[in-house]
Amino acid sequence: MGKYSKIAVIYGCDSSEWEISCRSGEFVASRIDGTKYDIYEIFARFGDWSLVSYRKKNSVRNIIPGNERPQIDKTDFSVVVGGEKVKFDFAYIVQHGTPGENGLMQGYLEMLNVPFSSCNSFVSAVTFDKFTCKSYLKDTDFIKCAEDFFIRKGDDIEGLAQKVTSKLGLPLFVKPTDGGSSFGVTKVKCVEDFDKAVELAFSEGKTVIAEKAINGRELTDAVYFDGNNYVALPVIEVITDNEFFDYDAKYNGQSKEVCPAEIPSDLSDLIQETSKKIYAKLGCSGCVRVDYILAEDGLYFLEVNTIPGMTSASLVPQMVRAAGLDMTDFLSTIIEQA
Image 1 (cartoon, rainbow, N blue to C red):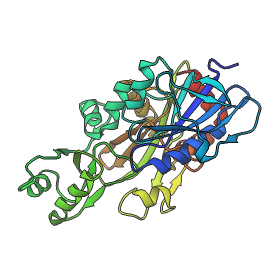
Image 2 (spheres, one colour):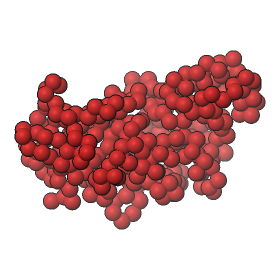
Image 3 (spheres, rainbow, N blue to C red):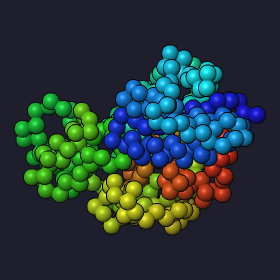
Image 4 (cartoon, rainbow, N blue to C red):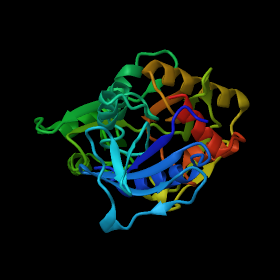
């Protein structure tokens, strides 16, 4: 028997990543141990939360037709199914972007005293904003951070392109501070393209970060807590022929992911230890993925993903398999140690 009984897997979101979130959520729900838990899949987007399907212990998945899906009662995080009221006692959050990655969903669950799978609301808010997260880490002695420039919607942008490119050089990246899956990200190679890149980034959010481009190998690693220790999974190297690890590289097969990364063991150890230090420094919970660039002058922090992709082909499931772990057992650990 597990610590919890009725697991709500929440997917869908209010951001551009909602379809990816659904794929991740469906995969997680399918791998949670059906001998320990009742599993309920909730599609949540723009305040409309409905029950998509459910799977009672040791039984098959029941899919609810779209026009018959019951609404979630947000006053106590429950649902009525077949005349029976079901109150969820744990939430596995698989919402990329808002509200599941920026702390809003976590804040709601915290107010109801419902345990969940991810970082708490404060840590989620801090890590979701790329500029804020880097500000927490840039003065540490175990990781480098690329130079950057923060821009808020409404700032005076006259002469900004020249000012930013003079400071950071070219090429540079322009990206929304609170986006994911590379939506709104541009690699700027000439000053004339800067304003258009900022405009695109603002289509995804109200704050933007311009960041010096660092040349090197892109590496990623994930960390979780197993009840006793922080555990770092095997490192993956991401190789793409595109300008950077953009949406097509991530989801349309335009990249190669080498797991475990073909790097010296001492470098792999360094990255894993750095990932654990970042996890501890930020106060993370659940499974968190950290992305890096390995440059000639050292290891650079890119970003933290507190709700990483969880489809069968996603990076974290690849790491779990490379570590020789069973995915169902891994998810049980995340649930039971929340």
